[in-house]
Length: 96
Image 1: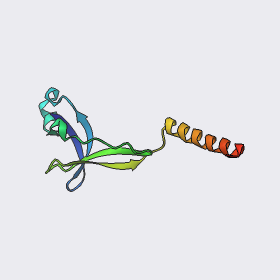
Image 2 (image 1 turned 45 degrees about the vertical axis):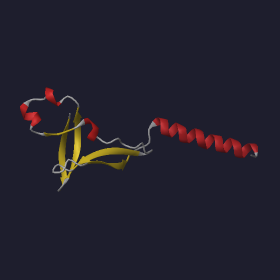
Image 3 (image 1 turned 90 degrees about the vertical axis):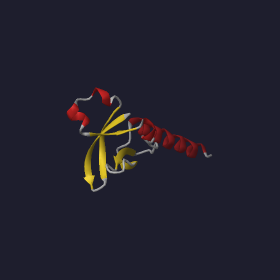
Image 4 (image 1 turned 90 degrees about the horizontal axis):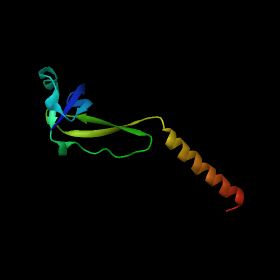
């Protein structure tokens, strides 16, 4: 089982703030604040460059989904983009 701490965003839509993989270790008060789901019910996020996956849930139905929000590029993404542009520039200068 997985415990999901969450905060309301709108009716039927809560943002998951913490995913707890050992909910049996939580206090009684903490257990009252989580929604329990089966491990298999947690969806996998897609890798989208320039986006962060944010997990949401419907607290009544326990439906889970991701929404993708813009984020600044990582250093690795910036270096990849610069490398790609340099390669293109070198190819143009060589006359390819």
